[in-house]
Image 1 (tube, rainbow, N blue to C red):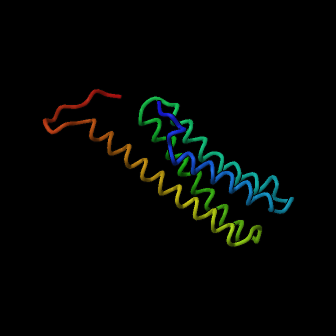
Image 2 (cartoon, rainbow, N blue to C red; image 1 turned 90 degrees about the horizontal axis):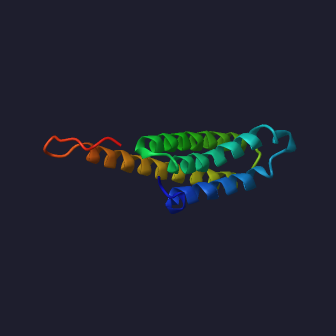
Image 3 (cartoon, helix red, strand yellow; image 1 turned 120 degrees about the vertical axis):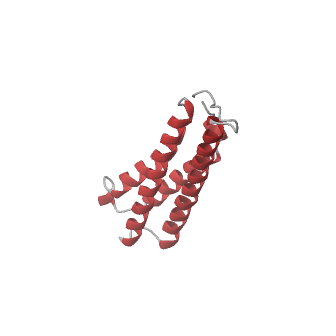
Length: 134
C-alpha cells in the first residue's frame, strides 16, 4: 500500500480537477448535465483512480488504476478540445487545461514505466533465479 499524499501526480490531478471545475463554471446552463458534468466526472476520476490504486495490494493493481487514470485524462483532453470548439470557454483557459492534461499524462506514463521496470528487475536476477511472487 502506498501513501497517496506522497505522490506528486496526485497533487497535479487535484489541481487539474479544480481547474476543470473553474473552467466549466462558465459553460452554458444547458450543458449542466452534459459536457459540464462529463468533464467534471473525468477530472475527478483521474485522481480517484490514482488514490484507489494506492490502497490496493501489489503493483499489478496499482498499475491497473494508473492506466484507468490515464484513460480518464485522455477523455478529459478530448472533452476540453470539444468545449473550446463549441466556444464554451476562452482559448487561453482551455489551453491551460489541455497543457495540464498533457503534463499529467506524461507523469502517469513515467510512473507506470518506473513501476513496470522495477517489477521486471524483481522478477529475475542474473543467475536465472526468480524473485518470489507479489
